[in-house]
Length: 116
Picture (tube, rainbow, N blue to C red):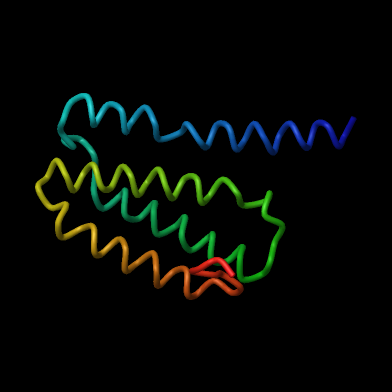
């Protein structure tokens, strides 16, 4: 019973996290405006998620204990790209995001950039 409850909690957390930012992203896309979204708070949230993911990977915690963070990071990056797009800065943002993600991947132990 305990194992089933734990499994349910793990998967329900992943389910909720996979849809957490989707209403905000769809509202931005529907309005075709990023008005009302604080760029500094979005960047701070993204930085916090990246730091926590780095910490979990460094100490080699089991994947199910932090699997929601890559999902949240992907949604934050998508929302950030929407914000930059509707503010007219997408050309400057895309190389920054690509370079930043490559730097973070290189810091994670045992992370592979290419499949072996």
